[in-house]
Amino acid sequence: MKPAARSKKGRGAFCNLPLLLLIGAIQFLVIYSPAIDRYMVMITKETSLIAGKPGFPSLLLDGRRGFKLVVEEFVPEPRVACDFADPRSDVCELEGAIRIRGSTSEVFVVAPGGAGAGMNATQWTIQPYTRKGEARVMRGIAELTVRVVGAGEAPACTVRHDVPAVVYSNGGYCGNYYHDFNDNIIPLFITSRHLGGEVQLLVAQKQRWWFDKYREIVDGLTNYEAVDLGGDGGEVRCFRRATLGLRSHKELSIDPRRAPRNLSMVDFKRFLMWRYALPREHAIRTEEDEGAARPRLLIIARRSRRRFVNLPEIVALAEEVGFEVTTSDVMSPPKQNKKGALAAAGDEGHARMADASALVNSFDAMVAVHGSGLTNLVFLPMNAVVVQVVPLGRMEGLAMDEYGVPPRDMNMRYLQYNITAEESTLSEAFPRTHPVLLDPMPIHKQSWSLVKDIYLGQQDVRLDLRRFRPVLEKAIRLLR
Image (tube, rainbow, N blue to C red; front, side, top):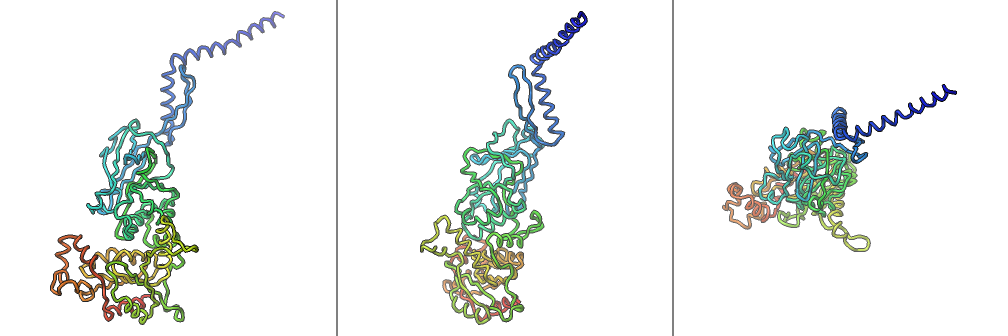
């Protein structure tokens, strides 16, 4: 019995030992908890750096406050690459902890070492629009301020995005059909198409009607609603990657050597065919369809200046050559609905785009005087023929850059017809010896506004049918 009693006493003494150790541990934690806090946070940071991943929650014991949850966010070293040398647009590519506050037009690049750590500059501005060489229009473009700051200086995130951002301006020449494609749509395609829709657009000076009009195109480039930076309240949007500005290569075209994944204008054309459900990828081949319908020719009938004065005679000539001819301004108001009412104002542009793309895609060739109507060539099928009639005023170089190169880049054929002074109605407004008719170059040197006013704003075209006939005959041959 005694040994048993002794054994029981021994067990009691042994059972009290863990209690004593627990009491001692608590006293130790109360005294040294600040040091333990620092040690645990250090371990968390080091583990994050080794793993190469953002920090994870650490459960720390604080003798004064009990248990607490501390989230350590890993801030990577930022990568900033800006191209300010391109003549068409400034573009900055940002990676790291990027925070964008639209209400103040600020972009914060968070650097773990604080402002200036490993950076050539800690603050700069950028205007995210593709007409950087035109001072007059750039004066109205919103300016973004980029700041490199330490984590403590950056505003707290209110919205976190898992996809990269593309930030650009919807201002400038927005609303001009040519500039809509040249300054916005094609640069946006170059900058974002390779991301497969996983990109968030942040738009300064956002025009809601514009996004309604081109919604098929925009919805094909992003899976998310475009954010209006000017109407974003106080939101601070956080990204891991962001592109400020849009890349632009040349007029109404793409240089595949400079585009992500070597995207080309053929890719852009196929993108439009997909988005607008256009049925014809290739124009008619007359040699393969001897008994088929004649090739279809669209003549763009402008409603303002640079109109064809003798349009009925041009139509008759084209039909004589072998075309089935239609004249249209293409972007006419939408058709009435079944109830006899026009589409709602907000949907008008959208309806016009749907009608225009389908109409143009049904033709094999197009004739137009230099102007925004030629922009519709993007909807023509491959191998179609584009004939640009260049008005008087030494406009040949401009015409080739804007509408001569794009058809060739889209696997189409291009013909250019330069009118003479006798074919311009300016010959009726000025004496035959006037410099406007004989030598436009001094006017070009004096002012582009003057060139625009006279040669683009005051003349119409009366084609010499004898001179123009060989052009139409060549267009027919090119469709074989």
